[in-house]
Length: 426
Image (cartoon, rainbow, N blue to C red):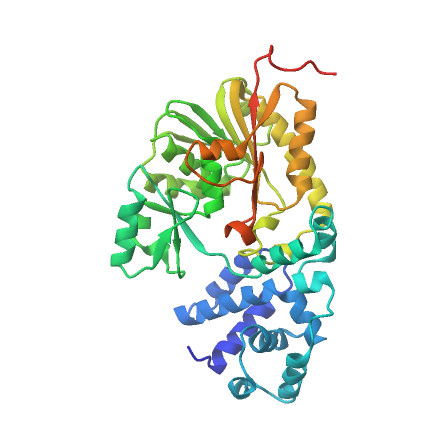
């Protein structure tokens, strides 16, 4: 589809609006669209794709442009990363921009430092280098520079995957089963699926395949009592409810009333009756304490850096800081300890993040296990294999966008042992 000058100017205006990065880019872009209500669907799609494309390669583009303005960043993005030639760009250029673009096109990238080629901040590369080599970092980075696919989850209480695939096919929406999740579907394009009857009737939910796999790791059974400790807007809670065939009881805890309110319409659509959203003040709330020792399975999808989601939230790498991660680690450890008290003997504790950093993942789990000898690490690959899901990353689940085409996810499963099985504390 040809670009027209007004679209380019609108994209520049949106970039100018977003680039201070004082808040999440998707929030700022939504506000930009609200303030420009006359924009058509094509305009919105072009602006969103372009803005997020630039955020994914912001450091590289700033390096090759020298002193970048939002307009020059956009032109460099079109010329270097979208492959537009000078003849195609000519109608949109002003003043000496033609000469600048020729210079930008000629810049060699071979000798650029790893952090610039990866489009990561220096501090993130340093953290990754503690457990990855440079080649692995670049492979991960290239996968993070691509937009994420649109995955949906079939609500098995109301539909099955074959039925949903058939409806999508009839409606001209190209889709295929996800390779790992038995209830996932990957869409080829990005239609407005939230307006489709399947969505409105509660038969599908938008959910990354990696997030779906966490539900199978929790492995809830009918009639059990489950806690989703950091439920947010409830995507995983709804999955757990469906896996339980709407039987048993699930408590969806969160400290954010706004996030829990976002769960309400989703819950209504889902047809589930076993979910109980509960607002808590913190991990030591009395609503948590009254369930101590009563719960079969607990999912702790902990607040984290979110660095596994850079395909969809590329601005995070520029808004996140090492100092914030240190604060998150304290919170992660406290939440995991509090959540563990809910479990019965033999109960399952699942700790998960959408981070790629070991200090938020294995580091938290290993410290918890060292302090709690009554918990034993279980093998994630074996738990998934029992459900005919072939993802083997060892004891821990480690999903990598470069390998699995999902967001970056981590999960660990721990089981509360009987007192006689637990080793004595030293």
